[in-house]
Length: 178
Image 1: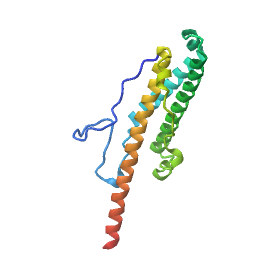
Image 2: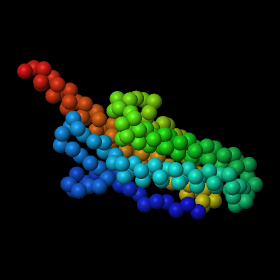
Image 3: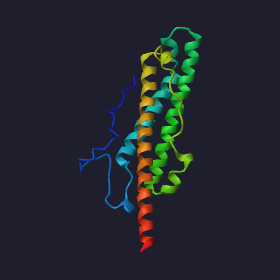
Image 4: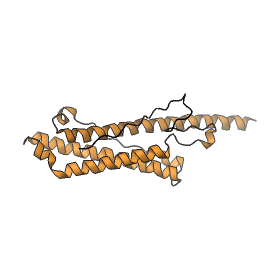
């Protein structure tokens, strides 16, 4: 049975100058990403472990052993397993792009290309998933929670980049005026 990892908070405590998860720099031109290497590594490890647990469960046949022979339930499980896989692959791809950005393999401009965004993942059919065995429900829920955390983080990073771009644009216009 997969045990969910401790959730890492994604909202910084702006009153705390020693935040370990988010780093803020006074110089906007030299601003580092809100996503620290430590957090990135933890999220990537979580995604990979969860992907391995999901693969193991989906391949094991335990679902069929633990459920009745309801054809609709089996089809729903197949659909949910594809949703989990899609969700996790989007998470892993996004995290790998973030790692490439941190290592200098991608520029900020390349990183925020629409093709590198966290992809769309359909929601779980909760009434049907509630009929699944506990282990299947845990894997589905964990994949949704990870995806939602990355969505929030991605949105936050995008807002920071847009806010910074507006400030940089204002400074450029002021400099060109003098």
